[in-house]
Length: 152
Image (cartoon, rainbow, N blue to C red; front, side, top):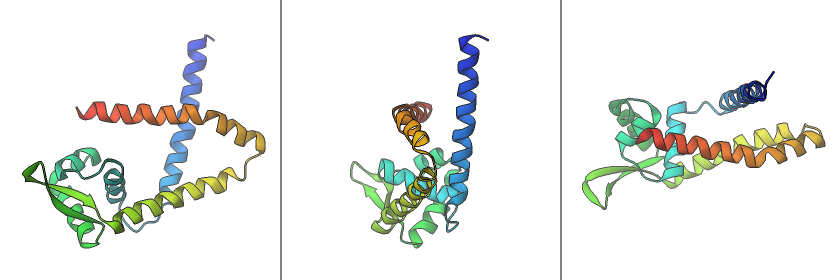
């Protein structure tokens, strides 16, 4: 077995565990709104105000579907529409204070759920995860770069 094969097997095993953790994390989230709605709110929190067409592309839904979704979130007080100061023809979707609070509370709940699981690990396992943090953070950065590059 060559080094390349071992690296590929390790990548696959790590990818499988990370995917499983992400899937379980999504399943643990409150079911008070659709995943697309929650992801759209998280996008607005992370990137700031966006056009509906941008949000639709990011979420992988049609523009009419995103328009309906935004309308529902607007009626719930989570987002609002504002004019774009740089182009008066454009409307941007923005988080409200309630929307920001919702996203941050949801994120805190997710972090606390993982922290509770991590607390059940041995000290050696926690140290191993802590040592892997720089690589995991770099992985997240690479994912962000890939997503940005695919939009261009």
